[in-house]
Length: 157
Image (cartoon, rainbow, N blue to C red; front, side):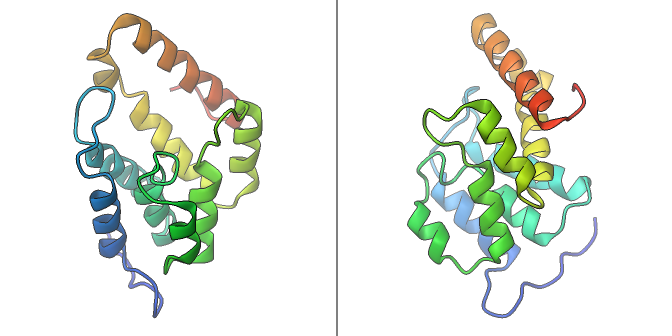
């Protein structure tokens, strides 16, 4: 594992971002009933493994925080984060009623966001995670993730 460079002066460190994300999602579980922080850690690890930088790893920790209302848009706007990290979090935050094509376009138009979403989709579509879900949910999610991967130009998983 490579060492993470220090945050720019005045910005949250990756450890602080991780702690913030874990606290924000405390008590929350994923569809399989696992602690939500496990998903956040897996996405951050996936970004790191794909060569992502510290700003993308920070975004990975926070990628669902606004969408899940664990943190507010106002918090994100005022947070001591690099502008690129904020832009990535905003890009991967799905809006209510948003069409998948519009969501994909925003991700593709935001530098660094595709890698974060790729790691998120990889963990969401992990066969071991999906195996514990009922068949209709597993089928629906598998189709949803495959459709978004196609819109993003990512290979089938």
